[in-house]
Amino acid sequence: MKMFRNLNFALSSAWQSFWRNLAVSLAAVLSITLILILAGINLLVGHAFSQVLDGFRAKVSEISINVADGTPLQTVYDYQQHLSADPRVASVRFVTKEEALAGFTADPNNAALSTSIDGNPLDAKLEVKVNKLDDVAAIDALARQWPGVDPTNPTNYQGDFVNRMLELSQWLGLAGVGLLAILVVVSVVIVMNTIRTAVYHRRKEIEVMKLVGATEWFVRGPFVIEGVMTGVIAAAVALSLLVLTYQPMVERFRADLTFIPLSYDPAFISSLARDLLLGGALLGALGSYIGVRRFVRI
Amino acid sequence: MVLTPDFASRPVISFQHVWKRYPTGTEALRDINLAVPEGDFIFLVGPSGAGKSTVVRLLIREERPTKGKIFVDGVELGRMKRRQLPFYRRKVGLVFQDFKLLLNLTVYENVAFALRVLGEADRIIRSRVAEALDTVGLAGKEHTYPANLSGGEQQRVAIARALVHAPRMIIADEPTGNLDPATAWEIMQLFLRINARGATVVMATHNREIVDLLRRRVVAIDAGQITRDDRSGRYHEDVSKPQLRAQ
Image 1 (cartoon, one colour):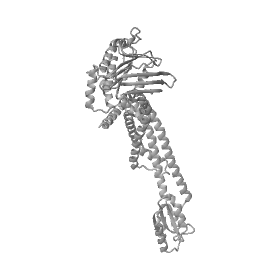
Image 2 (cartoon, helix red, strand yellow; image 1 turned 120 degrees about the horizontal axis):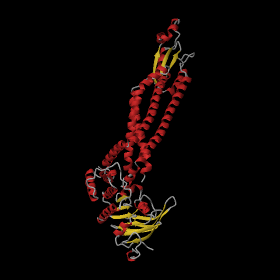
Image 3 (cartoon, helix red, strand yellow; image 1 turned 60 degrees about the horizontal axis):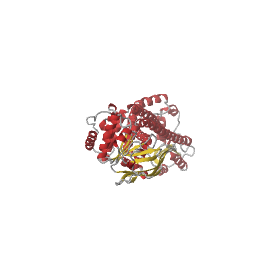
């Protein structure tokens, strides 16, 4: 009961204090909003890159094993089954020579070339989808040892390209994490100082609280709750601005940078909302906790 | 020279060879020995910088002694853990020269504040605050903000806040320092009534008239040392009546 009363007191005094010190509260909201907008942009850019990378990954995680002419069909089926049983492999599809030719001629990009083709120079092939991009090289090496493979053109695997993609995705991932870590540190410092300024204005109140026997958590509680409130309001503002500008920005970039397959992903907004609200609340709470510490220590 | 009065009852406050040196090097107190029995009313007097406020700060554990021990109610303050401190302060009522009121809270809210930190129910808070405001003569001013009160009234609010949780001890640091003589006298009447109810009162003061009029126990401090401890003393040493000295 006493705990409930203390919580009630902390909530109501946090609410009152937010409105009574509106100028300082708005300064804190503004600084957290700016930080969360930067964090949100980082998340959105990261998401856009990961979408683009996923597209590339899907392409390069599929290799075609060309089957030598004259290979018995049963040998191909056996090898298809053998590959399907491999845990690294997601799926294997057999494409006959006829199907390969039909696919080639159906592609409008090959229209000119397909008229000059005499007979069917294309190989039958096994199209293998690999679960992890890292395993494509191993599957390629395995395929090259299969006796049924076309020795002149065994697979369409482009090791260099895949390795570069892997490297790029690792670097982008690291850069995103690094940028986010820097943002978190900078934001905690900014929020801490903003809240310390707010707390400084109320040091007399804290002094009185301590003198009448308030525990450290009784003093700290309203400030931490106020920090959470500030963070959540800032997150809501940042989120609104990001949601409003997300689609127009993606369309603008897509128009300018046609070679990058950027796309607007409305499903990502809910995960962005969760991250920003949680991030704002944590940032506000942590900033308040650290900011108020010097004044609260009895 | 032993300055501890030989009172019959068990001391509620006891300073035993207490020294206090601040980090700046200032030696604020030197070998202080003092025993205050329960229900006593004691004036700490002396010139500015003598060490009176340091005694108060040690008593509310804003400071720890450099050497020696301070016991309050049998508990050694120097050994008290930080987390125990709020519970100790709840047993003490504090009154300061600058009132230390929260200007954005009403009279009622300021007094209720001392009970809120205890997690008391609203029903109890309402009745105790009303009682405390009645005691200090501020019934009817519940919804007034401190800025709209006189200095004397603000000090009354501070006293109401100090006594609302029925402490056994009131510590006051220059409570009449900002008040005119008539208001100061009214405030002193309040302290006397609180003391008459059984609370121990320790008051650091410069107010010579009040000390001389009330003739309560007077502990004089000068340059960090107790120079005089009279059971029924005056602000300045009363050379004509040496029999009043505690020793």
